[in-house]
Length: 178
Length: 409
Ligand code: SF4
Image (cartoon, rainbow over all chains, first blue to last red):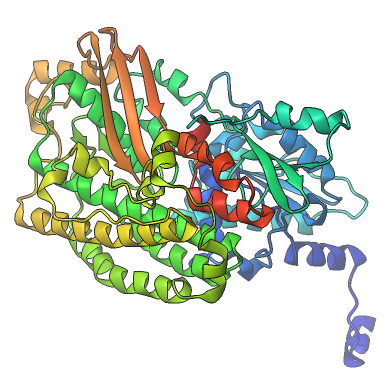
């Protein structure tokens, strides 16, 4: 019989501060209302009734970067757009995370040319890469769940984990399909 | 009529110099109501829009240039990503242009499949327009309803091609694969519910006083100006000009289908809304006719028999060396259209989508150019928004229905 059990009888739950903070962060993660190209349409799909992203406390898209925690880079980033993306990222308040949604945001996708930035990680640090052109809403949700798991492991001291790689995301998506 | 569209610099310069009484507001490229990455520099007098300059290019993807380094067949994939609400229409336009260049005959059944899918695409594209337009005017629930039916259409695309959005299903010479067995019943189920669903959306909006307040007499363009501005699609038809490429220059056998061209009267936001809603109903009718034709046709013919573009059938490849070599050459090297050029225009959900292909006789196009209706429709924004309230600008952008992927390409 530990002290936890005694305390629980009195209606007190003990836990670590880290756990509570991370729990709070994952369960009300507000994405930035920010669509770039085709992938944004699938992001809209994920938010609508059939896939219902609000199950994970993420239905409120904030149009202002000041109020957002998560930037989902949904689409290809052109050279003209890259400074804008960076600026938006800088305007978001800490802690903040980035999901690169789609092949274009992850690595340039099918556009290996003069116009498209070959992966948004040239401009902002990316936490999770979601593969697909465009990724299915399920894949995006899977990416978000992965990010949630990652945030759960985070230290409040602010040291961030290395990004989850594209390979990993691919694998996860494949498994989810089967 | 001369069109005066200022550049962003022209609007900003006097304000920066402190020489003007008006205020300059920068809207976008990250703004929830610009439907993508459009930047609009607005000169305001209080709440009234004095002048406005659209700044495009934030999504410039270099699609046309990249197509020059792909073989004709492989370039189809790039066309999907242009107007990403209507990938199949883009596929079709490009395929028709190359087919015209090569003089390929397309089997009747492939044509019918194309018509059916493109009409479904028109419905799905209009659904996204409807949802986002209503969302911009703060009617959230319409979006949820519209996306519900859109998912059903995407399921059909997934059934035929394996992809929800970027199907690349319409290829040069026909369509990519045979239709799956449950295609016809699935389409039937959709076409049965669709008219009721459209009634449902209309019940939410058509007589809604708030909706009328925000759309009637907002963004009026008369027919003459619309033609001068080069508007096309529903934006043009809302002004009363019954121009539709499906009737004017029929392709894929549209002349054999029975459908009407809905037109508006005043050319305001409300008319554009009514025209698009009516267009969805017409699309359901066309799709139903195509569905009936497909039911009466034996399976098979989904690709041309012209060996210049179509690979030999599988049985032949396993038996004949020549067929195997031909198949190999077709996919590694590609086919070589004769030297020349061709232009084809189709009625995409957004208007007249044109494709111009120039061939120098090599397996890769020398130049491909698209006439993107969104880009040209966007020209009208300055004309429509001048003198209106700032809040109407949001409604106007939504009502013009530009897809920035197509504007910038
Ligand atoms: S990954 Fe594909 S769907 Fe997404 S933005 Fe790029 S081209 Fe479009």
